[in-house]
Length: 390
Image (tube, one colour):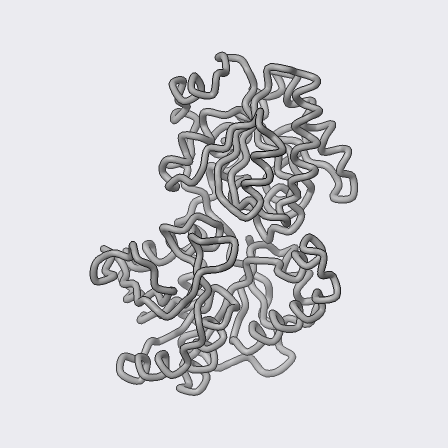
């Protein structure tokens, strides 16, 4: 299959969408498919944009305000039509709903090329965090319009598929997330790294990995950490990542360690060198960071939502609390800070819970779905394919 993937974020950028499609592009290429990734240009793209298993095609883009490491793709319908008329793909898959993605969908439809999409980010849910709730319906309408132009929309979980279907999205299936259990594993624990954090062998370290932005629910996260620190003064909090809130968080929490931006390989060492992961976000469509923390042997606590709902059995592989009880998440965090035996048991069982969630299985199913769409007619209006197992 000749596959064109269009995305406005891709490695070396670090976020769930970039990581997911970095793995997918590599694995599909290794399976013998011809994969081209169309992404906004950046200075550090490989020479000639060639990779061992796929090629990258730089497209016009501009830096995203507040996120200098990320770029917003610009409309490029004419460029896509020209490229795909000359070298026609069997299928176009659009990973992001920005101007670049929408122009790719329109170009593919104009040329009669099958096109699919994936839903990764609850942009409409972000509006409340940025104090613009009146824009929720507008954002949701945009997302629905973009995705319903495509043959099939893939979302990370059955739960998200159900929510989207209730909002008028059609032709939904599951594209789950794998976890690299070789990159994320307890054996990568570094005592020299812990020493640089000024913690002893038994002092609990809480880690947070991700984009430092309002939708990540930092007020609750730091409320939980304050309670943990009060209950166990030996606790330390390490945050890895960048984002528009970083400077203000550093000013407000000078006792915490802000480690900065790391490659995915290096971040595996950070996970494994910590002990606890608190997942406070309620806007994730999946939450790759949670499964990475579990694979690294960390004791985790989060809301009964997305990845936590799938992989955490409360009291066995982690702690989960109802989504409408933030105070219960604080209580769970305090338990992890003050009960060493509980931390050790949950961390060991967390690793076992995600060991079978291989990327190989996830991508094998996705490959089958894409091959089917590349060779089948669009479903009749009102006909929604059965949701695939996660």
